[in-house]
Length: 422
Image 1: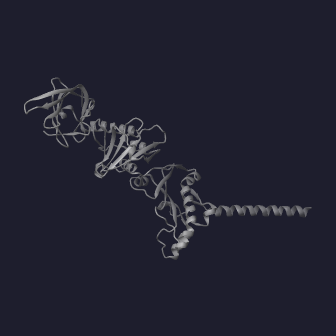
Image 2: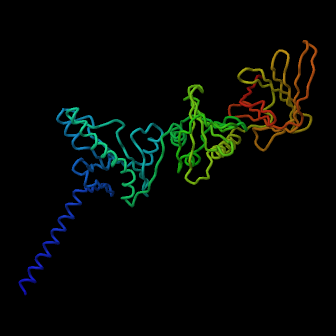
Image 3: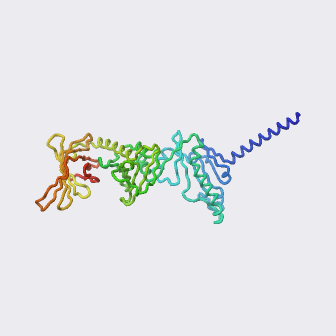
C-alpha cells in the first residue's frame, strides 16, 4: 500500500510539471512582448508566422514592431532587405508636442489610438502600400489568404492593445483637411486665418489663443463626408486661410448646425462634412460663433476704435458702386449716414439713417433707415419710390479698418466691404 501511495504522489508531481510546461509553452507561443511598461500579445495561431520585436531603445519611440516572417525571408533571398518587406505595423509612443506636430500635417499611415496619465500618446503606424513579398508570382498567389488574415489581426490590434493595458485610455483624432487646419490654428502660432460672420465681418486672430475652441471642435467628434448635394441654405460662419486659398463654412440653419463646407481653388472645388459629437448635443457652428465673439471682443478692445473713426467717405471695395457718407449728427453721439448704390445708368438705391455707437467701440447701430429707389427719366428728372422705413442694422469697423454693413431688412450689404476713400 505504501509503494502504491508513493507511486500516486510521483505521478501527480509529474502531471503538475507537465501542466506547468504546457502553460509556459502556451505563453511563449502566444508571443507576449513587453516594453515601456506595456505589453502586446501575438495570438498563438500567428506567432510562428511573424517577427514581433520590442526594440530596446524606447527613446526612439517605437515600442513594438511586427512583420510577416515569410516576406522578410523572401526579400532577403531576393536581395531586397531594405524595402520594409512584410511590415504590418509598429506601435509608437510620442509626447503631446510630437502628436500636435503630426496632427497639423498629413498623417497617412499613422493613427493615434490611446493616451496615458503621463501625457503620452500612442500611435498605430502601418504601411500605405502592400508589403507582401515572395520569390515567385505563384508563391505570391498562394500567400494571399495568409496575408489577408494577418492584416485582419493587425487591424484589430488598435482596440485589443488598449484593452490589454490598463494604463491606457482610448483616444482618437481624425486627419481630414478640416481637422488639419483646426490643429494648425491651435498648435502652429504663425498660422494666418480669419473668422467671420455677417455680424462684424472678418476678424483677424491678432494673437488670440483659440486652443480651447479648437479642442471642442476636435475632441470626441468625427467628421464624415456628407456629399455636397446635402449643403444647407442660409447663413454661416467662415474660418478662412487666405494664404492657402481654403475656407470652411459652418452653417447656422436649424438642424444643420453640424454641416461644414470646405471650398478651395478659388471656390471651384467643394466638399461637405458632417460632424458627429459624442455628446449628441454640441453644435459646430455655435462653437465657431462663440469663438468669433471672443475674437470680436478682443479686437474691439485692442483696436481702440471710437465712433468718430467712421466719419468720412467709403466705397464698396470690389466694384466701387456703393458709396457711404458718414457725418456728425445734430445731437451729441449721433451720426448721419447716406448710402448711394448705383444699379444702372437710370436707377439707384439710396438709404438714409441716424446711427449711434454701441457698447462695442467698433460698431454703429440704427433703427430708422429709409430706403428709396430713385429712377431717372433724364439727367435732371427722376422719381423716388420709398421701399421701406424704420429699417434696422449695423455698421462695423473690422481689424483691417474696413466697414461691414449689416442690413437687417434686405441684406443689401451682404458680403460687401467698404474702404475709406478720403
